[in-house]
Amino acid sequence: MGEKYFSLTDRIRILSEGTKYDSCNQTTTCHTFTPDGRCIQLYKTLMTNRCSGECLYCPNRCGREVTRTSLTPEEIARITWDLYRRNAIEGLFLSSGIVGDPEKTTQKQLDVLRLLRSQGFKGYIHTRLMPGVPRDLLREVSLYANKFGVNAETTCESRYDEICPNFSYRSDILDRMKWTHEFVLKRRKEVNYGEGIVGANDTQFVVGASGESDGEIIHTIDKFKADYGLRRPYFMSFDPVPDTPLSSNGPSPVWREVRLYQISYLLKDYGLKANDLDPVLDDKGFLSDEDPKVLLAQRNKDLFPVDVNEASFEELLMVPGIGPTTAHRILKGRPIEDYVQLANIGVVLKRARPFIKVKNKMQSRLEAFAP
Image (tube, rainbow, N blue to C red; front, side, top):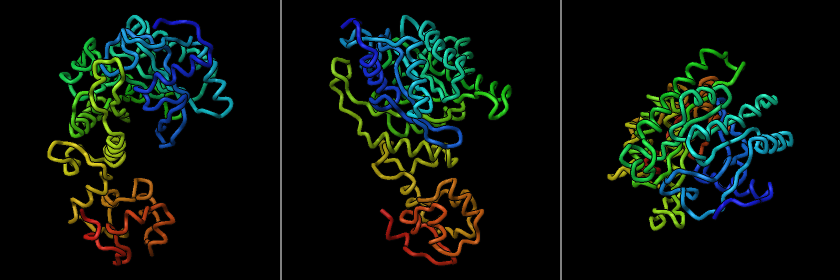
């Protein structure tokens, strides 16, 4: 179906729904996390859902019969400002279909970013870039966006070739992730913290689109963190779209996406490596629908219980129900006198009790919680 006239309200709705495979829901808002850990709400939209790409899973792929429409840079800026001034959002998530080629598309995205920043917009901007974005335009995006990057979609070149046949995993994705990392590092040298925008590298995986295991995804994330300074991976459970080449494939369960997010926090916020998490995978490399941190603790019984008054920061982090913030609070608040004190500083006692002791006392035996 070709593009025809739609009201602004209709176009906002159509293009927000079209970001499903870029931000994991079909509403006009999505969430992201700032460097200080705050969860903020963003207005999310495609600039256009017209696309020359042929990705096998995508509802906006070239040639598929779908209602096509667009928003101009001026319209996106106006909508963003309106929502921002009403405190409905704290920023913008901007993606797009590929209009002609990646260069033309990125130029249009930059028009939005330049316009907003020139008007004094101080909110958060998260920009999803196109595979094959030119290096000079990627550099300019780094001046305006708080988070930006291209979607890896899957774990390796052979799998990518299966689902995104008109792009190259090595040059269109990995080279761009490398450049993004270089530009982020350069901005960190140019800008003092809090005095200007310093972006972060991000990417997304469509979980289950190409048959990859969770172990493959986890090890890929670990490699991207080491090689490209990946800040935060995003995940989208594959859901077959009618009239696409993968329409007859089964969907990936949403819980798998949830568990991968939990794994990503363990990799980024807890300092674990992919190999540390191999024990929570089954023989085929897949996660189960259970909290991976609890499973990891159950598979390392010899590490527990830990004495909260003697344990190191790293030992406290291994305890279910204790995160980085509460671990620091425990260290600062020692000596810990009782479980009430732990609860007051944020420890989730329901999860933590089997794995800790306070004043040489335990409230539950670890064996009672073992699988």
